[in-house]
Image (cartoon, rainbow, N blue to C red; front, side, top):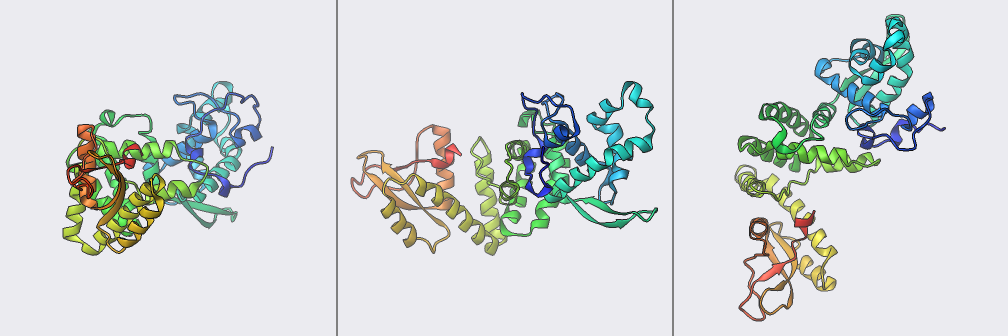
Length: 351
């Protein structure tokens, strides 16, 4: 069976589970993900090894390490694959043999993690003059390790004592990104933490990881430009309060963030517009105003379909009200009957 090169893997390899037709028990079946043992969430052996490597970030912190150091000081005592492999009579195997037997597979695993930007690697000459590599965990790698700890929990089951610890990992990663949306994320995360809502963020991000595809760039985009349009109780209020805070503290960043929100909403509105040509024309008309979003809907009195602009902040607030009441609400009066208000089709509510 052909073994895929490291660059062809996505973040799904961190949480892959055993397939029902897995029967082979040879090295190639392990490497391809066909062979696995069932532990907890029934992860494949490959996933268990990758998760154990990421757990090493708690010990290694910013230190560099080689594959053999990783195996000797961590994997043999932490990874379920090797704990099982060297149990019973096999436990008598000397440490050096265990390390050398595991090393080729661990080097391949580290190559995959480097491709996913979870570790960085550099050339290294060992004491015996062997040319090898040293590795170091990235900020993203440390954050992903944190997410893997909570991928099966609900927000109310994550102890608040863990919020602060994981928040520091998230903050360190988003501070390294430096773009406008990352700066807004930092403000939003801080407000969620202060209002004891950060557990919802943790669960949301961990589910993105659990549902990640084989396209690594898809997940990286989801994380770097995290969709913060949370629509459960309390989160929407934190969202628009954070936007208002940003507008007061950093107008330039606020303008960029509002433009991204506008484009995000309008692209989804466009996908279900009843009159696409009219929607495009109206969208073009208001294209230069980053604080106005063009929406598609209908009058709640006369039933006429309607395309109208709305203040983006008003849209976010009315969307929150609509969820609470169960009825679409807005402040845009119908131009035809002059009695009703426009019920926008709250597409984002179904994201």
